[in-house]
Every structure is written in C-alpha cells, then in structure tokens.
Length: 444
Figure (cartoon, rainbow, N blue to C red):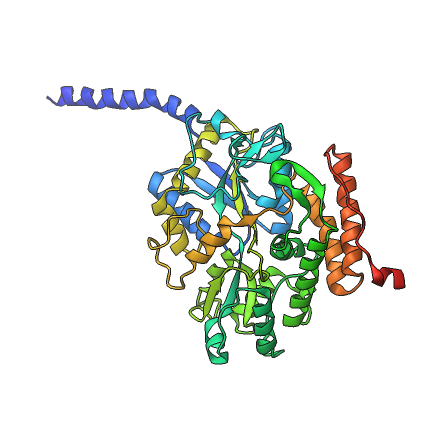
C-alpha cells in the first residue's frame, strides 16, 4: 500500500513538473510598473498589494517624480528591450506614444477583449486611429486602460460657506462674488489655482474650453485649425487671470503640493484641485479639514456649459517587452477594472475609473457624483503627439500673461504662431487666423 501511494504522489509531482515549463514561458513571473509620485499613488499602491495577495502574481512599482516620468517612459519604450511592462501615462502625452507606435494594441494580445461598458473611456482617449491621428472609439483600436480619473474639481470649505451664508458657485459670476467675500489674506485665501509654466495649461483648460476656446477647432474629428488667438480663448484667459489674482497673491508660484497643503491646513476657502487631492485632504495625518470640505464641478460661464480638463492617467503596454509580460499586464488591468476592486481602490483613497460606483462605494463626502460628471465632460486640450511640446511653449506664454510680463493678446498671438509652425512642419493640415488686436503692445 505504501509503495502504491508513493507512486501516486510521484505521478502527480511529475505531471506538475512537466507543466511548469509551459506556464513559465506563457506567463511572466514579475511585472514592473513605472508611475508618478502623486496624490493618488497611495490608494493605487494599496490596490496593487491587494492584487498581488489575491492572485499570487507579482506587480512591482517604480514611483518617480512627475518631472522625470516622461523621460523614463521615452527611454524604456525606445530601447531594444523595455525596462517596464506597464507605463502610466499622463493623458496629455498620449498622442506621442500612440503616434510613435510604442504601445501594443490590446487586440494583438487578446483578440476578443473589450472594455466593460461601465469603464470610463475619457472621451475616446483609450482608442487610437493611426491613419487619421485621432482618438476615436468607433474607428480606432484600444491601446490603453484607464488607471485614475483625475479631472479638476471645485473644492470648498463647507463650514466657511455656512458661516458666510454662501452656496457652491455654479457660474463664474458666483465664483467671483464668493471669492471677494472669502479672501482674507494671509489667514484665509479666497481661491487657489495653479499658474506656473508647467501647470497653467491644465489649470486654465476649463476656462478656455467652456467658452469655445482652446488650441484646435475640433481635433477629435481631425480639424487642427488653430483657435488659440480667437476671441473665445481670449475671454477664457482674461477670466482665469482675474480670478487667479483675486484669490491668491502669487498664483504663478503655486505647485500642486503647495496648493493642497494650503487647503489642507485651513488657509484657503476654495480651490480647483485634481480629483486625486481627495486622498491627502481626507487623511487625518495630513489634513485638518478631513470632514469640512465639499466637492462639486468647476463653475462655468453664464449661458455656457461646463467643460473640464482631462487630467486622467492611463496605462499602456509597450511593444518592446516579451509576450508573457504583455499577457500578465493585461490580466492586471482586467482585474483592476472589476467593480469590487474599484470600490477597494476608492475606499483606499484612490480615484476610480468606473461610472457605476455611486451608491456602491462608501462615500461620506458625496464625492463620486461630481467626479462622474466632470469625467464625462472632460476634454484633452491638446490631443496630438506633439502635445508635450505644445504645452511647454503655451505654458510659458500664458505664464507671462498671468505675471503681467505681456498682454493676454500678445501671449495668445505668440503661442498661436508657434503652434502653427510646429504642426505645419509636422505635416498637419492647419490654418492660422489673424492676430488678435493688442492695444497694450501697440502702446508699448
């Protein structure tokens, strides 16, 4: 009996050992993610730890400062063999990686895969039509997965509002009035918004897009005619400058970390902050306003509609990694998108990417409705592969207008010519309208 039992065990062991080579060649043992250090990182890390625990797989994270992430990704995807199996990409960089052919179309990994209907697509930004160079779900292929829905939202102190007899603003005019009443520096700043060269393009986007301004006329449909130096864009820029200066003494010096710190320490009554700011603001170890703030969508112009800045992050699977690593990366994203795991992400302080969590996840601050609305109406202001270059040159010109170094008209005229030249040299069909009249420049 003992001998027969020995052979039965040995037979199972042999079968297991025979199966091991096939498994090891078909599935990667380790998957490495490169990601930015951000307010939503802690919740994401906890969710990855849950994935590793639940599945027995191994995802590791390389978290780097935002300023160095783009170069890290570029170096990895351009190498013969990629260092990273998943690259977390700012949605404003997507055109570069789509257009460069650096990411793997998901259908080449798993032909039958489709995103669940409840997963947010960020205005078709997950899909790329390479022939037309546009984001388009109908005609393009799925290339990336949503990782965090991170539009800007309007944060306000509920206790300060109640004491002042105010209600959350829906329009620019209401925001103006609230800011005037609440701005009591240095103890209490009326309204915070970033204005440094690296941040201003993102932070100003809702003000430009909500009045029909922006950079391009209709990039989603392939219309790349310039509208930077249009009356609509000028209106949005002038309002942004006015409200930024009305609520804080030096908005051009505000970084995201400093802005969140001012709000979390009780030194601001209102602010435009990314959705991921909810994490540190709700953490009692880093905030004294954990249960004192409310969130809604950013105010819009009277008679207009709210359009918000898409600050979302997506995950791509590079072309230059082994097939086993691609499959392992895809399996992580499929797990990550499941409703139960998105609930865990949200309750751990992260920002979810599904539209069906209202009433499902614990949400004591009623944060999810505003997040869902803003994400649904968010747009990418520069959805082209040259977006990083465009944001850099536009950011500098807008910052000069905010600081008073040049007029708003000159800033937009200069940026429009620079963008037109850049796109023309890159082969786009584009047109440049006449310059805006600039009385300030002519007087100077």
